[in-house]
Image 1: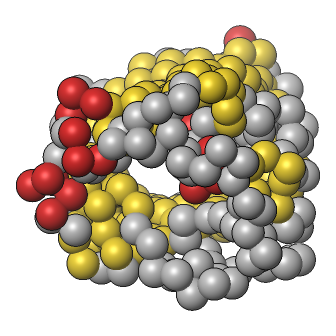
Image 2: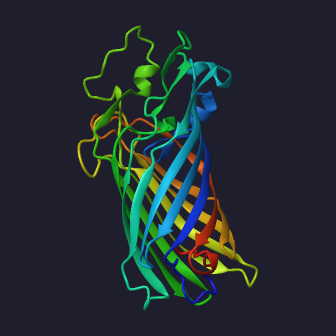
Image 3: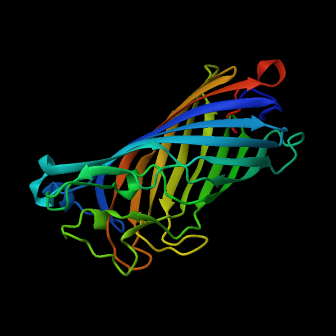
Length: 337
């Protein structure tokens, strides 16, 4: 949108975006306190996430667009089994496949014919349970014995097993030599828990693990959220744009709708996110690295168990977008949308 008199996509245009998210987590936190002994003893969990998302957006009118997102997940979670045996005893679990597909619409609140230098968009969508929420792998119990095919950890399941509602807010404002922007996405999952046994049950050393009466023997279907606020500024006339944002994402203790039983790892992580993008004609490439500075693993909402969770120090985000259709084969990529 930089250098363009009209920052909005035009009716009939279709934008295809392929995004990737990659991270590696080994640092454990209980509330906001790092559990450094997990590193010292070599008992830490290793969580590696590779997520890819294909998003197709169709502009119906200058103010209204519809989109569909198709994710693919390739991830692994592993813990030394037994935990006292160190890295060499790590038992990895893998989850791969198509994730939960989403579809929705977005609407610019202010008339686009008048508000060229700033606007706010609101969106709502649905998240469908197309991903497998019961993916399995062969791994032992926590003592390192009796390997069997069992459901993998919740964090590497391609899906969560629930229908969800997605709420979105986005906005931008042109300022001298650049723009400021903000976005917020909240996924509300009304389903309480699914029918997949949780990690505590699956790595239990008991011959026949008992079902916990507190409900944590099954995976919760939790809400999630993500927000970003920052600024972007063109780097001369090169086509490159630098950006810096505050980035927060998390999983709340309690869902917006419905009950909050089952096993979940609620918490929040905050980042400073530097990035760079390049746009030319109908194409755009973007790369950013959120750098973590705050983590907090909240207690379980039902049991109050403090638990712990691993958080990444960095996340690597990459995206490529191209626009088709509309007048003259498509307008320049609009970085604000």
